[in-house]
Image (cartoon, rainbow over all chains, first blue to last red; front, top):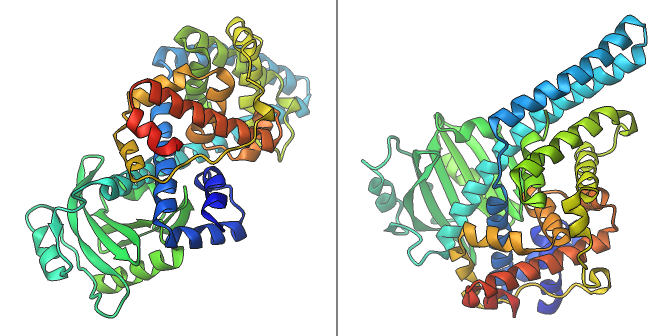
Amino acid sequence: MTCDELRSRLEPYVDSELPADELARFETHLRGCASCSAGALSVLQMKLKTRAAGSRYTPAPDFRLRMEQSIRPTRRPAWLTGWFTGNTPKFATAAAFAALLLVATLIWTIRTERDHAFTELADMHVATLASANPVDVVSTDRHTVKPWFAGKLPFTFNLPELQNSEFALDGGRVTYFEHNSGAQLLFTLRKHSLSVFIFREQSGISSVFPVTSTFTKLAFHVETWSEGGLRYVVISDAPASDVHSLSVLLKNAAH
Amino acid sequence: MPLFARLYNFAHWLTQDRSEAEDLVQETCMKALKGFDSFRQGTNFRAWIYRILRNTFLTSRTGLKAAMLSLDDDENNSTEPVAGTTPESILLASVDQQAIQKSLERLSVPFREVILLCDVEEMSYQEISETLAIPIGTVMSRLSRARRAMRSSLNDAGLHGVSRGISQ
């Protein structure tokens, strides 16, 4: 894949619309091309910012109430008529619709909260990479980085020994998710940067992710799990296998 | 009510008016309830209800005005590469939310709705195609043109350096 070919497909890439085979060729090119990586990052940033800016309007509480009131009288006679005349298909349709609404609401609520959490973390990761000072403690030594957080966070954590791995520790900083403080650690693998977020289990972040999960969204690979009362989230544009490798190192260090 | 808040957000962006958005959502919900028989099980519920909202909007006074705006032979334009790769494109991080909202407001309705459905509602191209009743190829070209128009709008608003970085 050439740079020109890649640029013509940047939008389907950030929209997660590339077929698997093309995605593999795309990411192979990205890994070796700083110029195209910067282009992809800018398009992705624009998409994330548009998403945040576009979620602008919320319905007024009184409008929601009026809606409920306006729908109720219309629906009730239809249901009652169907019920008392033995017209069960009508009732079944209404019940199926109500069930569908409930399921759709639940799915949408869970998905929205998860999307919100993902967006927050992706924003923090991207903002860190775009910053001139991405970390507050700059060190490749875990024995320097870990003690730096002492007194700054209401918990502590272990960092893996990286001597025999491809990963390098760049440093860390204190970050916040819904008013809860946590650690953001920055690792490097070849030309990729990986953020590791660590928060207490009680912070809001744990309730929106399953106990353990991996997923890909907006071309970011994410792996998250709970361990020892802490919630870990690894996020990066590196291949999913590399995100998993770092996750394994962190899990082993936590034991 | 599922998707109520999301539908309202989309309606407000289309109408640019709180009162009109409320009327639009109310009428959409009524039509969805009355016409639920027309919803085919196994098909996409979200695309179905957004299509009702959009069609309702297009038959409103505000929607009819918007429909009269030309798409500037949108469907005949090919998709061009969107992003340059200059380091200053990273400056996009400094574009604030208000500037993006203003640029969204300035877009024509066809461009605004395709960006909202893709970036805000996170619909797939297939879902957008079903919602807008247009082919997927048209979704892609319209989306590309809409994003280019947004960057141009940001440029006009004075973010010359940022916009230039991604439009080269």
